[in-house]
Amino acid sequence: MNPIAAQQVALDNALVTPENRVQIGKCNMRIDPTKTPKEPTYQVVLDSLALSPLYPFFLIIAEVAEIYMHQL
Figure (cartoon, rainbow, N blue to C red):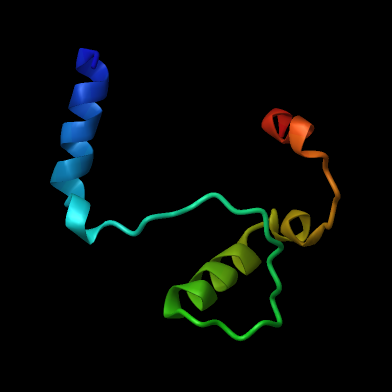
């Protein structure tokens, strides 16, 4: 591991310990603002997005072929 990556890992571990981290998996799902949240953080994220000037872009539905997703 290069020194910069090692420093970043050390900083990440100092800020949030590995046992307290939430694993975020890859998914390809649409955000439904009318859906009732199962987790309390879901509503916080929706409220934060709603305050963002980019919120309308999150509501756009587009079908993108998987081979082109890396370009987005």
